[in-house]
Image (cartoon, rainbow, N blue to C red; front, side, top):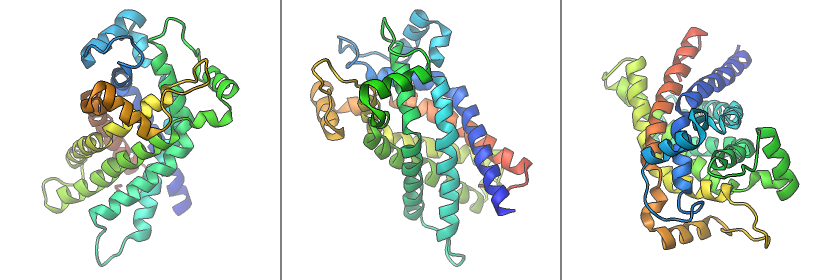
Length: 294
């Protein structure tokens, strides 16, 4: 039944996303720490992703690579099903049997689905970023996700849970343009041109292409999102960045234009495997329960 199919899609998308998130989380925390380098430390020396990961293990142990995993998993219970199932529903709504959807149309649908999903999941994303950044502090601000939620609401108000939501929305729009639209279009191209059948090979190729596209488009917005969400209110009651534009200007002024692509390779290194694990798992799970391919 259509209703049960939608429930199955939501459940399978959540499960696949949690598998992918757990697999690639050490790369994600390395990317976040690398993006925060230069604003959370009193030095502007350049560091590599390998140095950042090594510092995490040295100072916090192996478990430090998974700091913030629980809110990340909670986020994907909401974020991934909304964007993937939402994209699929919108795609079918606008699909014309006489002519397939163009790539720009798919990109708009993917971006819109990502925006809706990110608004809902933004509080969990905020907690994840704060807890990932906490590992750099001698006295961490938060002990658990619930503790983080409680402290954020007490000090910044309920709507403080949506701090950085606008750069978050910008990133979500760009990421899902790359991820959903590119995966959908690339898989269709691969199957239509008989490069591979609708199997793991087609899913792998399509996920690699979508990961690279999403990273290139969204990395500057990701840097801005991370910095906006991690900033707290100073003792004077002021914020370091007034808005996304102010964050971009200050980042470029003090660190150069290349700072907007800080964490590009760890982001790509994470998105590639994440996309592969998610899409292969999701497509396989759909096949097992009798759902058609995405």
